[in-house]
Length: 422
Ligand SMILES: Cc1ncc(COP(=O)(O)O)c(C=O)c1O
Image (tube, rainbow, N blue to C red; front, side, top):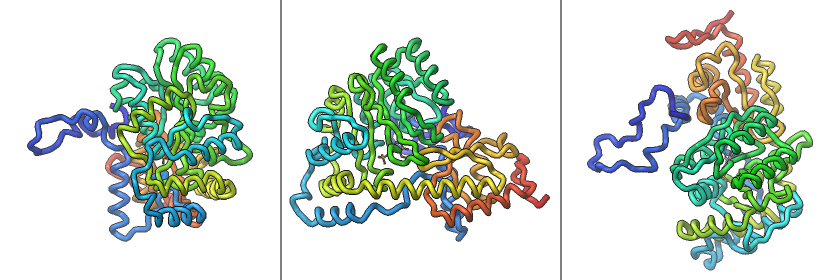
């Protein structure tokens, strides 16, 4: 089973010793969480008083810009904002995202018919797949992938078609072949890409849209890292492409661009029929985001562009420090042009143990927590993902721990790690 820690049995989710005879249809389909073991080890090490540098979860640590926080405080004091809000988002928030798309990507959208506010990208994406994919219909997803891109299809009882990520040329020919032979209903993409950092250009999207129009495929583009771009690279929106709105929607999130992960604000934008369908399903499921948060999100979109650049700049500096200091420690890693992650191939000496075991070794011997690549699909098992969510000093400290590990004669023996000086 994909995404399964290798040693676990298929009955992992059976309730133990409960009186209910029922099998819980959706939860039983989900394999165990690969990150769980590492998270538990990290918690145990911290409980023992160890200083663990946590590059595991992509949970932004940069504070939300002050004007956004201040607006929330002001809005929360008004009792009118305490009532149920509207599921598809208040009009001014939809207007604000439309204006940002116009300013930044020169994309025109109608706030009434082509925008719905979501409770973060993750909620939007999972309900979008449930909305559009019937049981048995196919979704094509490049792998490694952000887990919900895979699991949303499983939750919908859809059929998952995995495609190796490779570079963008390989990926494009893989997408074209799979669309022709397998006729998927959905194609789920996300660039800049978590975890690999792969970036694409407008020509890539042009080809994708042409294929999707020809074969009537709905393209869902998760644009969570739209603004975390470096070294002069500008990430294109798929909606910039002529004709994109006939076949595509894009998911945008405030979590990373404005460092608002806990606030849960995202959007789904583009094809009006899809937006209507998602809005309809969501109107049955939720009453919208707490209104003061929506009001503060308007300030983010309208007034905080300078903070977006500062936030991206902080991640860029951390990327540079990480890649340079880890390189000096004996672990050469390629610099990504975007995202808040570094996708690092496991040093050769440890590669055969796989990403979960290597993550345990890093935690025990270098005091660094990372995300095992297996958590993003089996093809990720030669890599680990490092999230840039610790400051530069702490990243240098991580590099020192790694240097000690790599400069020793550490080898995985099968009975545990032998670490010693050469
Ligand atoms: C590709 C991708 N999409 C979506 C999300 C989640 O975004 P949100 O906080 O808006 O739900 C993440 C977060 O790590 C992500 O990596």
